[in-house]
Image (cartoon, rainbow over the protein chains, first blue to last red):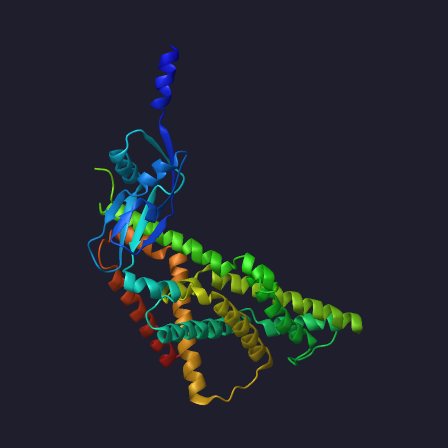
Length: 229
Length: 139
């Protein structure tokens, strides 16, 4: 019995913890496991050995997306080492986006190839935001007849009809409105602005997540997912 | 008199604050700015866009309430018309998307191909509709 216990330790399976994000960006054509995943193993040499497994060999030279399942990663690991228990700490399906190296630098810095064009786009969206916000509040004011409501409020409080003239009430409304917007966007506390994402940031992230999920689902429906055969 | 004026100030401030929260929460949550930033890949300028929304909302409101005249002539009209058109176009599509009009329609009709043509047709329809509406009145 004692001897058996001793050999049992030698066959004890090694646990490998893997975390893969939903969307991974790579710049090289031979994608290794360490490029897309974070690995942890109690035996460091095992983690080091397995991080060099080739996951994907990209053939195109243009920007492209590959959907892949975690099962495929497990299969590739087991092909090299059978005695590993793989534990998934990340996504079940994920996207590998290949960005050609010449594009990668500009993507990381700015997002487009020409900075001037990028400023142009940012200015465009900025103007749309500005005029759009102005348009929204004007249509809202007309829609709910703010002026008439102010006339009524003035009459209730002051007992006299202001007959459409502009009073302190309108002034307060004009001050209260920007305060409301800034509170909504959390723009009051500069320090907090860095720590807390604003509503648009949150929307942005949830939109990215939905896009990723759509890519994964589409690939799965068209049978393009890289999966265990 | 002071008390009455104080009431008015409180009333105005809270009305402004609540209207802002409601209206701007609506246009943000419907995802127009998100989509524009994503499409143009300028997500790092989001705080600039937010500042522009704050400025646009406040200034637009002041201009409307105080009926301030802006003597910018045709340039002003064209710029304002064009950009508010872009904005309303995005708003209308975002609204349709949030209400899941297209997935339901496509599902019911059993449409498999031609989604880009539908989007083009919607844009063309909006253009024709607004042109007709403005030309012959009624809207």
